[in-house]
Length: 255
Image (cartoon, rainbow, N blue to C red; front, side, top):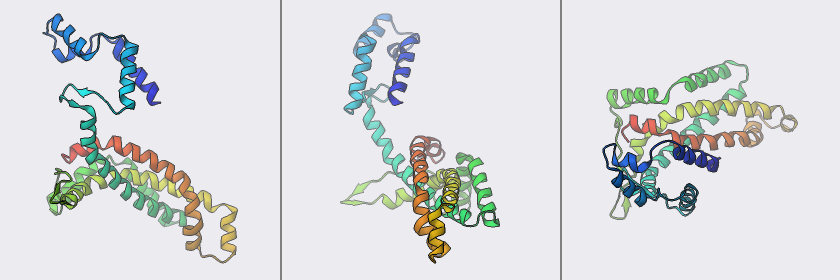
């Protein structure tokens, strides 16, 4: 999929009028200056050669230079991953705890008030835009209660052999992580409930209950283990979505 996407994007850029050199130099640049920059960027080479060079660079970690920041692209990516990866991990941890607890609770009380209540909250959680929920969190915990900062991130700074910025960084990411986790937890809770209910209908569950195991012991010891297979699949997709989708929340909190 990634290879096909790269081919499509490369050839679309190739077909469209103009080139990167013209954009960088601006509309008032002379043709000679544009051609000189095009040669410097390697745009005078055949398309297949340029695409092959780009693929070879990707495979070896050479992503080229950013002509906006005059910095290697890999450095820019790694600099931002130092924030995005911990934020996504925190959001995923909160998502997992909330979703598994809510999904198990709802499945154990199938067609009862607890099940209806949890699924109603999950449906509301799915419908809430995370950037709007982030603003509500700022109003409550930053403006009203003044427990946490409304935004900003100083980084994981290292001083005198100690990571002194860990707690400050953790506090700065709590509200963004919660804002990201609400929607993901609501989705995962519904998947967890469905997976647990499907496993509860299996013969080995009836056998475990017939052997004298309590409902809770059967649920935690047998049902959850087998229900986690589709749940973990969804969690993998959600983590990838968190890595790509944190940009809006990062802007809301000025991270």
